[in-house]
Image 1: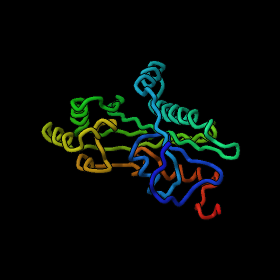
Image 2: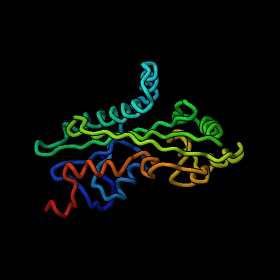
Image 3: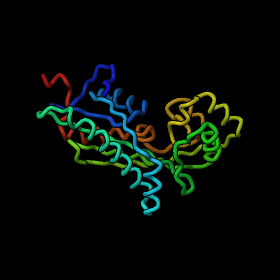
Image 4: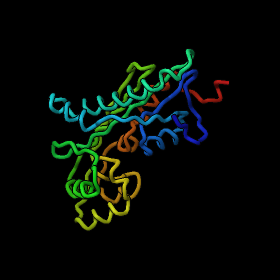
Length: 222
């Protein structure tokens, strides 16, 4: 585990908050909210899970929640032995699924795939399903699913290629190959949904459930 080098404001008494994600965007959301948390990236074969779930006729929303749960469980299993008997771990797992014209768009695996995804989304409206799951000591206590709608403007392949060159490997980290938190805003004409949901971590519902479990300013613990 690595701890963000930032002064935190909010935390849980006698409990750790763990983010099971390597996503810089998700880490920055929690960091900006002043949450005292640790980071534990995990590896889950998302493509295989999606393929199996679709074969079982699982709905995209349920797949997103399942993947978020699997990530949280993987992190929870890794940290169980490191906890003291008097502390608990609240583990946050997240997943995001992009759907356009009834098809799930996965993260691109090459820059050419990223370019093709962008061109395929141009001029169309797609949906982002953002799932978040919270485990306490390995047990699921809460989950939430947010849906956002985004409309891309029409652009040609030259613009898509220029955009991919500009953001580089970051195009491979998100379904649809765009980074809406930065220059990706230039791709859109309309966005409907909460900003944090679109970035992949529904922050306000998460803060609400953490408050129910004792989230307070860290200074109050002393």
